[in-house]
Image 1 (cartoon, rainbow, N blue to C red):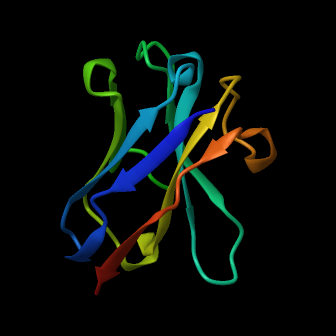
Image 2 (tube, one colour):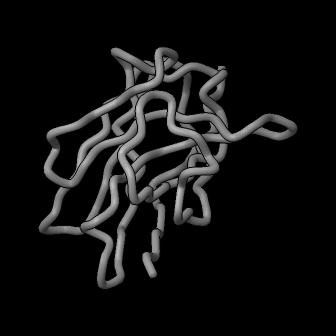
Length: 125
């Protein structure tokens, strides 16, 4: 079992920055690749970015490239999503994800093994 707990969401103005975090726990969490998805009301859950704990593999969706950066800190068991130049359309619930296999881009929700509870990010225009 892997547990994922997100934090760091909130309200920010367009053009601003925000960092969300995901703390992973459980005996085997280091065996999983980590990712972020987002989902708005009435929309499908959308892949944002993914990383391996070693940092050797990183993926980002085209919609966030150049603005969002994913990183992991093994010592803190934490994966971060640094979001810069935020836009109103980035408003969503952001979910942390763990997958046994590091997929190609975009990650598919059906191949995610564990989800966090989500954290709301709201960007005001």
